[in-house]
Image (cartoon, rainbow, N blue to C red; front, side, top):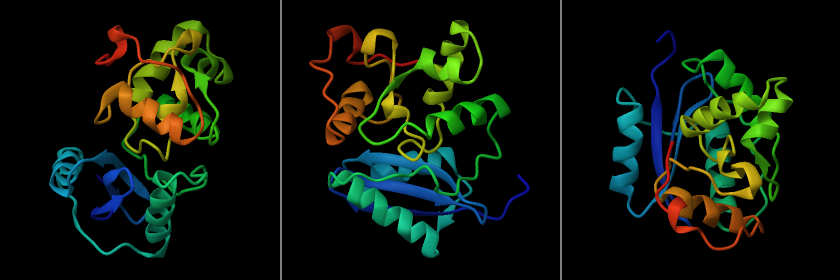
Amino acid sequence: MGQSAQRYLVFETAGGYCGIAWSDAGITRFQLPTHSAAATERNLLRRVPEAVPGTPRVEIDEVVAAVKRYFAGEAVDFSHVALDLGDQDAFFRQIYDVARQVGWGETTTYGTLAKQLGAGPEAARDVGQAMAKNPVALLIPCHRVLAAGGKVGGFSAPGGSAAKIRMLELEGVHLGPLPPEQQSFGF
């Protein structure tokens, strides 16, 4: 892997238990909230099985504090958090860079992100795949990326599209009721 050992921490927020993993270079994984510390740890270790529990350094502690503020309903900007996405495809990293600029309470679409990258509408599917594989959901705000026409689109995190809607509502974005066909939709 070419990087130092990854460490992780599971912590409680107003939204449930989150998990974070990091290397010396930055955050490698972020686990959105689940109902229990054990479930969060299981989900996180499924993605970074080599990670070991660790005590966060100051920068990681600051991100944990910011995540707690986020789930308490405070506007938080994660766009400058150091990430370690070394194992991600180069095009996905470009998509993530653009997606990180979508701020609190804003939304965009898969197609709009594709256009911002200079790609045609056919690249919207690639954007959707990148969002589905986002290793650091929330820090790269994939919940703010919607399907065409303002439809919710998929969300591969625990809770699916309903979790995406709850996160957007925390930010003051109201999309209306979830249509039945999107309640368990995934990419």
